[in-house]
Length: 399
Image 1: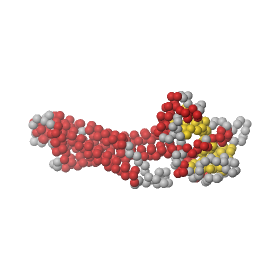
Image 2: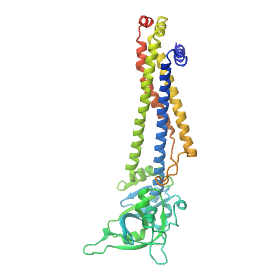
Image 3: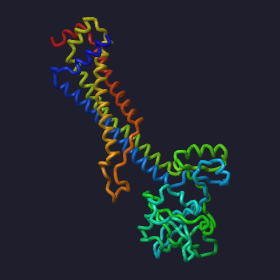
């Protein structure tokens, strides 16, 4: 009987119908489901691409783990032997002065010998060696972001002044100030860092910032994805320390991107819901068209459950064709963009040359399953309506 149900469902769906409008509605339903699946796959892939690009840039630039409190570097090295670098840092807000212009920026004073670990690919992102070496004038070195360099027209070799208003002592009117020579300019292509961050030597920071400086320990890992595991390990052994991973430092940003992705997922499912109404309409009209056939099948011994399965299988065919078509087309479009980069982005607006996409197969599977489930839930009403038809009334329909 199951084979008969499938045979009747295929016959009703693929054979030429007397009412072409029903076929048109069924075809539109398949296209609607496919378009919804394509839109979901492309949108999620684009959001994943941007999230991955932002994540990689931030994680490659900032320390993977920041530890505050009375921590000993040698103890941390013994507890995390796989760390690439562990070094002390002083973080502080200060005022940068170039000629008559001033701006507030973040100063990171770190161990000069560990500076090479601050970026994973220094040759590609530095316009100079980036080392904080003293110059012939005996002025300390400072490395600034490209945004600061562009704003003040500062290049390597120029002299700038750093003022520390937070270190003004009672009774003194003069703000502590120290001059630095620009020894490097970094470009992280991250707005907040390029325009608001400068790096000086750790000893210079300790000498200049007498108070209010935040003493922390930076930890660089070979794989930034291990940061959470390292945090849990240290938190169990040293619960008195404040430990933050690269994700914790920008949690608001990553949470916003994740919320945006799932909000888009829910919103774009409305396209599939619109296609569902077409499926319900198509099946209802088919039930009316095949009412006499339903009555004959019932008289010949078919149970109401068989009639219900016939129309359920028809909905299954629509869902399968729509979902498979959408998954194939959507996946091919995303893969072609990731390989060939057909869609480019304007350089004056974005810092990424091409539209980033990242295909996550688990999400593709989820999109297909959700679309399939929505369609299957929608066909219950037409199939139940067909199953409830009485044999005699169905045979005498339109007579």
